[in-house]
Length: 336
Image 1 (tube, rainbow, N blue to C red):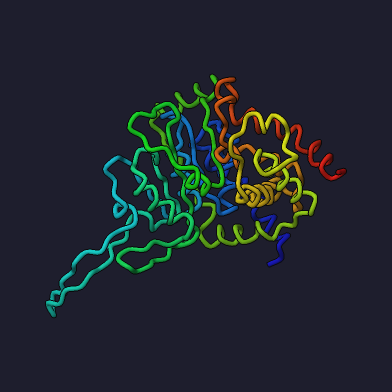
Image 2: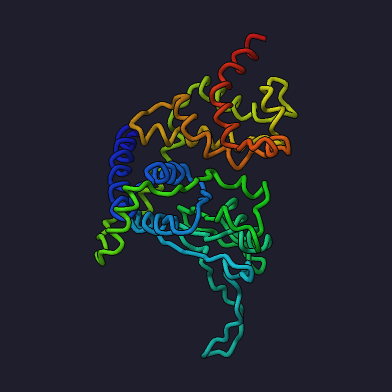
């Protein structure tokens, strides 16, 4: 099938998927858009928001609409790696009496994984999940088992509770394509939520896609053309976050940032921009597409220093400032 026809299919599917999700989720339009960009880009997401904002409901609804296998893992301090990946158990054959180890698959063997409150479990268990995210396989008892595609992890964490939590290290945060901040609904949205959730009526959801179709769309995204100047903008935007290695970094970056984003950020900016272009009915990527996914890609990859924290500077403030100054600094660097 021609890529243009497939792109039109993706556009129509996106509209239908959003319509089905909005039967259940009221508001959160940007969150849904970011979620679908990550989905078609094969990217994992970290949702940050207080309890009760329908993060879990959003992910489970997406799985139903896409007709994908779904597993929810509630991360707790006593969760073990084997609770996620599965384990070998000793099995005795009823006829021969022979004993052998048999692998029992864990909840990781699904298409969409919801890692609820991922920062509440120790690093050893976090690492088991994050290894699967990177390698799309798990190793148990010396044997390696591939995970069925599409495989996506959507994790959640609560930004206001820190007692008894294990913050994700920067190297593990880097495995997530996007960080998506889920905000409170507006007054009108909350009225609609209150009315719909207390009516006793559950909306009927239609399955719009299946695993095979999702994989076709995921394979289409990398084939979207991107010009050199758009790729250059994405890379220079990421490099301008590094005060140590880039002499052309803006002064506010040198003043406020301790460590900048790594090369994976450049890859995700371009990949996310390609998916965004397709979802907006365009077959070529623009700088505006890169800008549209910049905050989601960079927010968890920039580490501020003490001076920025003392001045109450947020990472999002730095990113917004970068977006308004990056073109200026990159053009100055080119002139030199």
